[in-house]
Length: 457
Image (cartoon, rainbow, N blue to C red; front, top):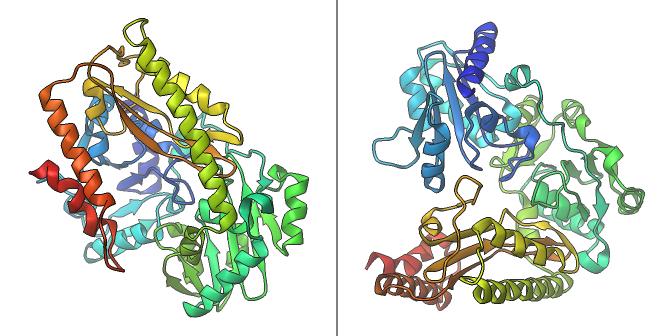
């Protein structure tokens, strides 16, 4: 089936004069998770992991993904004719290296520029410049061969009240304006969804496991604009935005708005702003590629937020403890599969006050399955949980007052000396990291050795 889809894609490529077509795992906002309407790479390749890029030439097709998904990708790509490229493995070319080797001078590389970051698009420009490769970034070829493509999401948008946010949208916008001045910019085009939700004190559910609404934002010294699907706005949310002096435009009008923007010094986050939007803005404005000022501002929680986050974790932890008691009392007495255990934990979370959704699909992995990163139990591989060995549970919830993400490894009976040794090494790494005293400017990468050293030893 996937071979047929690739051939249909090649037919569209031939019509459009395209030599190589790229399909990424992203939406128009650089989101980590995407709704079904944006799962073009999954539709074409059959690979369901949350990260990967598909490259299709007239002769072959390849998929690049990281170490979390090697085993899953090998299984799901079997028989598709698509070659798996294991990223960062020795001897495996990057996508750019592959393109430089496969493409001839003057050929055309195409992709949907709305689904590739500005940074990535500029990277392809630079790498392929010496080959004089033509970049077409306005091509969504998948749309032409995906007859039953899921509808674009448009779910209700509501406002987060002050008793949960702790700060008005107007005050947050003032902080953003001050930050823009320090960055030497006159305006900000904001595309990152969690930043938008924070700035405008709104929430939605357009993306599974994320309380976000598809939206854009524009801020300058004189105006603040949010681009949303107006029919999704609750009346209370619409009134709240107007009271905060935020102008509301239709989501689809963002490109019309930017088309009319002239001679501005506009700040964009190159990792999150899409390439199409960046190229449009660059034609008549000066672009400043820096991290969104909202990123640092929302990282500093106010007292109201802190109290709600603490309450979320207390309530969420209580649900997890109930699960731990349930599984330990029943394992060996009744047959419990990984999927059944995950479903039980999910039900417990739905009973927590303020529950909105899971923060990601619950990972419940028994025995050797726990060694697979981002493992997901399914009907075809759904192990029975037995007394003895380890059960890994990685789970979390989205609540009105915060987000949780908790990993626990449960001992379900007798374990071997080897497991004890490895488990203790992990504990040592965790303790070493938690006790670290570090200098200002240190990053997670600098501290990583503290966690890994006991394992390396």
